[in-house]
Image (cartoon, rainbow, N blue to C red; front, side, top):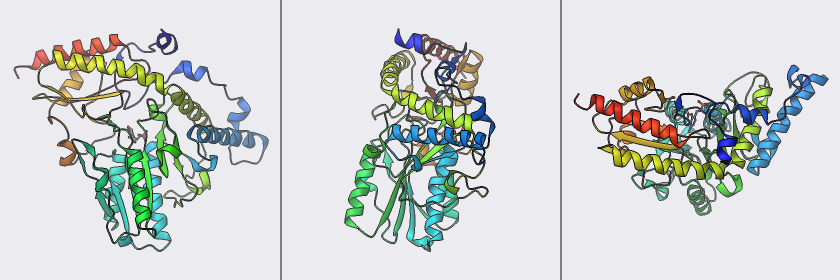
Length: 397
Ligand code: PLP
């Protein structure tokens, strides 16, 4: 009842692609205090009254997010989204080390082959610049935290590992990795290790507390926060020095040049706080819906495999493979029946590495169903019905 009143379905189709993009929650936005025209006129960099009013919106937003994360306001850097925040974390750290005279062969980037392209492609670009990139072992039991062991030649190491996988929904052991890093640092007091997590898929279902998580840098973006897209943020500890990779004005501590989108930043900060306040309730709601969906899928559809079902997963993503079916065909047929899902992350148009594909029970019929605030049991019933129809239609092909 509570969910029905607060989060009633704003849209007719059955939208089950929340991991790609969340719908704008108009009711949530209407519950936020509206900005005044004066706050929306000026450039936050200007010295006049309108400029100062806009600047205050940005600094209030910074404080709102910092308070939520238990961080300092000057540790929050607004970006255009999660992709830019990830680039800033990775390129910014490594370029800063290089600018301080650390030779490339003493630097190592440790990540996983399962990262979103915003990290994976950035790592590949750095590899071309002579930076050693190595991968944490990930197998059926998840990330092998003990395999985190820097190359002996490295004096400066950046570890980046996502929090919740954007296709599988798997929750990666961020606290354990942070613990392992503390252990490695104790053993090698001269070794610098910085730990970043891409938490873009986490804030709707997991309450986040930076000191408990133990990370040095942390990314989120508006695309998954039920607000308007075009903004994101990087948390970075005060002690960490980054070098900008874009050039222009001195906004965002000189790290993200360009006039700040005042309206978007205000909504983003409030939407993040809102998501965090409701994370436990949403987790509870989605866990029930996910169990219901997965039970129906596995009992009513033959040859279906739910990926990473045995691991700790966020309840907002179910990734499955159905042997001998073409993923795109299934997505398009479901779309024609009013069901929006995806077969691969919306951000991926390059083939993932083999080790990544081996992760799936089957590499055919890969489908990601993802759920959110507005998802109902009826949505899932419609999705199961449509999927069964499509599979029946193509079963003899
Ligand atoms: N990181 C993860 C884990 C994501 O899921 C996404 C988007 O799907 C991104 C980064 C990139 O977000 P954006 O496209 O909003 O920059």
